[in-house]
Image (cartoon, rainbow, N blue to C red):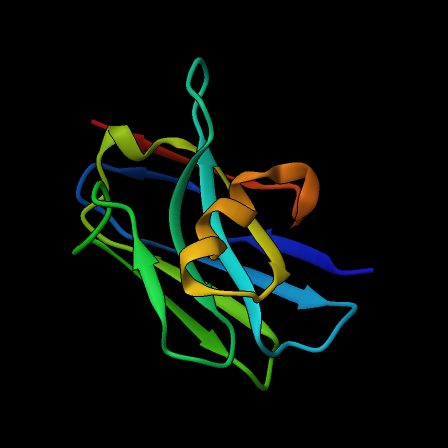
Length: 129
């Protein structure tokens, strides 16, 4: 069974930075559809970025493009989310998700269907003004 553990969430002031980590285990860390999603109180869960593990393909939400950068370390089976220029609108619980890779067009939707994917417990990011 795939297991995902997110770490790195914290409280930071507007304009600050954080780096989240997602540790992957339970299966081969290769050719997976993976991503970061977030959910704030009273709002729907939204995708932040998706990627293909062991590859360079990524797709960012417009709201974070240019500020957030995803990366991966295959030797550690870990995906990172570097978050810069944070604003209060970025405040949310951030979740890491993973599923089998099928296609670039389908990856985002695969993870959006939470019941069909593996999820971590989340890590809280709070950005104050």
